[in-house]
Amino acid sequence: MKPKAFEVRRVVVLGTGGTIAGRAASAGDNIGYVAGEVGVADLLESIGAPSGITLVAEQIAQVDSKDMSFNVWHQLARRCAHWSNVPDVIGIVITHGTDTLEETAFFLHSVLPAEKPVVLTCAMRPATALAPDGPQNVRDAIAVAVTAGAHGVTVVCAGTVHSAVDVQKVHTYRLDAFASGDAGPLGYVEEGALRRVREWPTAGAASVGLDAAIKLEGISADVEWPRVEIVMSHAGATGAVIDALMAHGAQDAVVPVRGLVLAATGNGTLHHGIEAAAGRARASGIKILRATRCVNGRILPRGDDAWPDAGGLSAVKARIALMLELMRESPPGEA
Ligand code: SIN
Image (cartoon, rainbow, N blue to C red):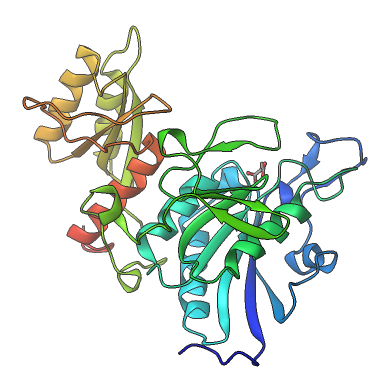
């Protein structure tokens, strides 16, 4: 139900930690800080809401995103689904660390309907920095969330808006740390207004051509999610890592590997040592997906491909797609 024009509209800001919530001992230190220290309600104190909008803060987690877990993803997805169904909530903003932001964005993209905007944002400098970038990024994310017609999962950093499918962290230090590869950004936030240059994203794995659609209700935090590992093909590679993973997974009390993403060279090619071991793994029932190591471009399928490919998805996103596909085929607990 669309809220009437005179009603207060709300944007919910979900906090998960990250550098945006980081605290350093001195204002001049942009790298020696502890991520995930400042509460999301405190972050919002200095950030005014746009006229007619009320901000609601909710702390979901307080983690350095290198340690992001399935449990936090599960809670985040559930709270996004909850707030999306509240009529006067017009959008959701998520504050998140930069390091695995693209993974969380892609996961949410894959499991949430695209009806309302879910905008992830972050910072490269801690909240205590002399000139923190977080407050402006949050303001920009809110501007995207309140834009008429906004929907789907997007990422806002340094005034640029990216889609969850295309976004990747590409720089270790610069404030403008994200890029969207060949696809290019979805738009730019300029003085509080979105200039969109591409269509809003459509929901779910169908948009990336993978059969990974899964309903959020089918995901449980109580049981182990399918284990999918990433193995990189490189000069001098052998199949030893894959063989070791298979042997390890066969031991009692170890979660067995159910899928492998092969981070392939160029247009999806694999070292012959990796390929031979992947063949042995596949023969024992392991699902294999190739992703390219290249930052730009996509794997162009050839008629004689022995292995399915993840198109333009990076290895970390291909891993999520494969995990969801395995979950759909046999839900957690039934594997
Ligand atoms: C993190 O990803 O939580 C730490 C790094 C960052 O946010 O830039």
